[in-house]
Image 1: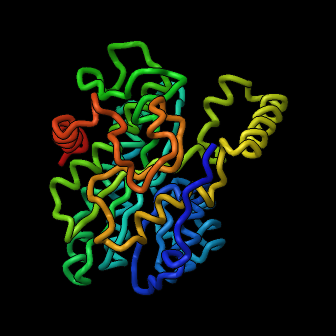
Image 2: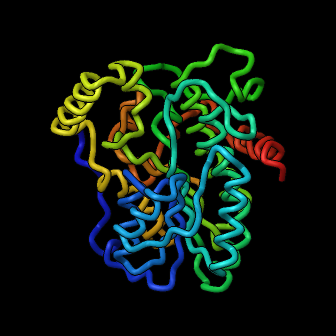
Length: 327
């Protein structure tokens, strides 16, 4: 596999003092390492996590701030988090929608949404929509565009294990009419993340807000827990085999560390605005079916999903998402 793409040292030395940045799912994995680096560069980083104890511990670890829980399976929790944030801060330079779940068994969120679509897309969409006025206001104050980074996946494209491009099932978004497929539901949610960034780039001018989607790579984390449990079991032997396989894939270079997994997100937050492509897809190397996409790129120069990552689908999804979250 290729060498992971990494930020140039000068980007990781930029002084971010005064900037306020929210990172969801920041108590582990890429989110934790993203927060750690941004705090190191003197930004005020809000770690938005579901679990209070883990969020507070992570904030203490990296020197960030934990102000309230954020449960992405509840729109009420999203609203409460935003209300708390707005009561404490009058600036937001970047929003990183990093949290995610993958291939979980079928269940519904508190609001009745299929869990992956509801948590990965709709809750993050709602979070961004509620915070967009402050993102735009901050850009006006600083004279620099704010950033919106949506963590997507190579799963938004076509990947070898499934074949066929990810798609948005507009006639059955919640998998109520068709047999539930854990990975295809995951793909739908990750394509939705990309379409969200695409449409945000169309709706808001680049001088006010730069919106991009990111594939962080196949990262050593607990994101694959549901797939592992289904394949290897939840017992001691299953956990042992899962850790063994992860170590082998990491040694081979297929799997990357969380530090390397954070690099693409960090690039999209830190790179000079005039070098960023609004609405683009920035990718670490990945298991794309298309060989041209596999090395990754900041940004990719070829569309990851020519069939379904369209401006028409992005606009349609935005309208439907607004309705579903009550905006």
